Image (cartoon, rainbow over all chains, first blue to last red; front, side, top):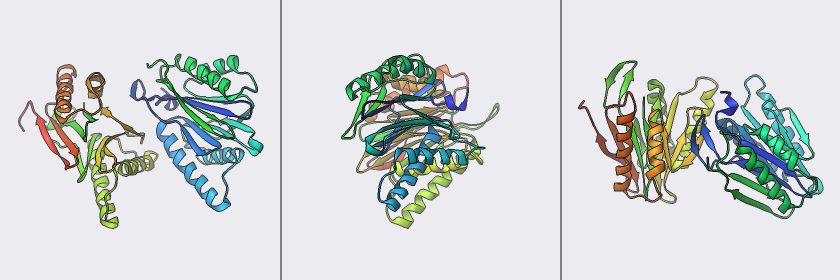
Length: 204
Length: 198
């Protein structure tokens, strides 16, 4: 089994009309054994920037701590928060630093940039950025997620419809993957508010 | 075949570990204490490579005491858990500690808590945790019978059920187990479950 599949994960981010959604599964496993069903994979960097980390749980926690400290230092020096594009470049640089001994994580970054324009991107474990206009996926269920998102996605969805779409795409994909699932965690972010919802799916 | 497991009850946390020290087919001793008392209100049950286990648990215990001497107040359970995770994560890509830890602690403000810490430094706060081959049996038993806010008697009974399951179903089951408990009065040894005297 690959080290990326040791803990199991599923992450997806989607762009809507002046909003974005980012969702993850909740399972923490050690190969075939489930340890917990409330594992946090999506982290808030600031009100308009969210980071999801799939792959090895330990490296996700280390990477989150490093990025949080870098962002806090940036905030102290610049007296403002980081734009999503800048943050994505930071993550990419930090991952490439470990080019020959990488963090076994695949990040998904989602944020509202200048003029509250939604921004999403993903990258591989050594920091190769992949910008997308519609959706990005990561984790052990990524292949199923690509299919589900491609068929369910429409451009310019309002936030309620976006929530429904991303939830259905996530739940149907993790149901086909034994290493991810046990519910879902969805964040819908508009310029004015952040809504966090827990999904109950197949608990197996 | 080392077994460590733990659970949170009403105002207390329980950690149970086997007490066998084994080298291939030989049982060196059956009263090896694998649950270290970190400070007055923390217990650390560790399983894994014997040398790494002894080394790492002592290292953590001394550093937790040092923090208390330097700062005058003890670490919270969460802080101790994150310290352990940090040490394991730093060592992971150089000289990894092959130790799995169940950390149980009682804090005045937040009550009892248990942290699951993997040997690859995955940290998660849980209600029940288990490591080793015994985890297949103890986690299943706990999933069935555990409920939040159990009393000490109920939790001990559940721990006994887990131990019985391990004894009857694990092919090379450990002979003796030790149960330690931590609550507002501190961390202490509760009892043993022996099949052999040592």
